[in-house]
Length: 233
Image 1 (cartoon, rainbow, N blue to C red):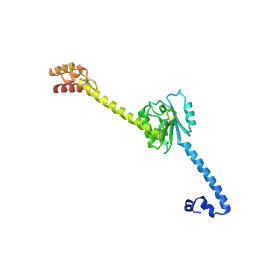
Image 2: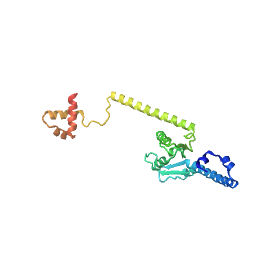
Image 3: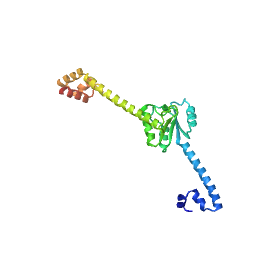
Image 4: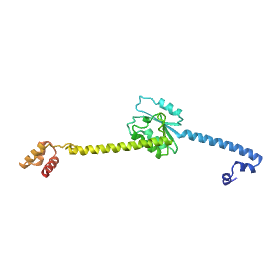
């Protein structure tokens, strides 16, 4: 029987024109095929849950997280002992790189995965780009595989964006108000007003700028700039 005929016929069609012995062999074949398909589906389901466990120091233990993730059905768990404040987390990067479409990353708590709301949203965005979801055992609302969980993270993203804009607005307003009060930003001036006046007097009396700069204990280029700025005022 050709491959095209296999695709066009169902089980009843095949059995209708097969011999008695052929029907027996075909039924046995179909049962084996069904069992293999079921096993393949079960293996894929197990592989879909990927655990991530982290502790901050070598003195801390991963056993509790490992056990919780195993009980949740994670077929594989990425583990590392590194502070959440560090951006370089090799196991997290490896996990994200190896994710497949429809995988779900499971953590015991969100603080094991991210150090801040912004960090959590960035990681969730990377998982989304890989076609994977995120689930927290301690925070049931943090489940991007469900519409409610995706909605919550969307709200969080909006709040984080609002906070950034608010901080930027407050910082800009504060800088403007400080400048109006005469506050100078940046590095403090190397020479005081009295030192600049002394430099002007020394140069006017015939002292070279380099010698005057040595007396004022500054680089001659610094004195040049100060004298030029004072002449423009």
